[in-house]
Length: 251
Image 1 (cartoon, rainbow, N blue to C red):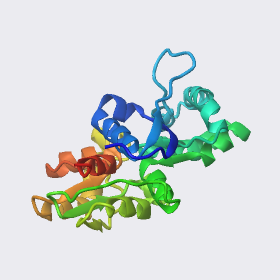
Image 2: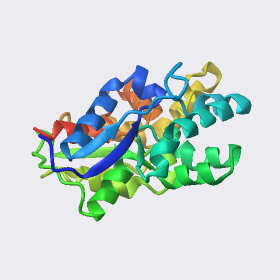
Image 3: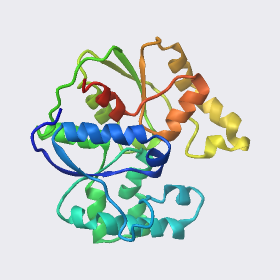
């Protein structure tokens, strides 16, 4: 199901979704194409390895290494960014680094233009809906309710209303946002043995009890990689990226 031509978009597939959860990237690609967009998958100019935002380097204090990754990203995306083609990403901590840390590490006109032209998948869809360019014929899902957990970066950048709006495109789906703090994973924090107890206490404040209490056919939605893993490990429930939920509703 492919819509009328809606424009171009660059889909940046981060390391987590490329290697660990490629089904999210495939779903986003299918949804964007079904809505009529020409989707470009960027490659580094050296073509040596996939593009990376450098988030994991920054988390370890390796700023020089992160700056190198940022330069590779900027160089690869520059030709299309200069033409105004939006850059869309799936992982909040990765994509929003283009709007935050890149500006600090490499201030300048090129970085600023990339920051202004970068969007999370749900942000892009909401923006295109507002402009009346995004059109999809979505079908009701077997599930009638979705519980939504927000990644800390989504909350910090006020993206949660966009996730809610995108999910509400699905006919008959009730969307409830879980009032939660950080899931407790915080990148690799929750995987470290010395932080495990703190991580689980954070998750048990509201997120995990709410997920466990959900009806068996309730969708659990979380766009952050670390959030999905914390939910799975702490509750036994699988959480889905919003792109996969939309893809399921394509019919």
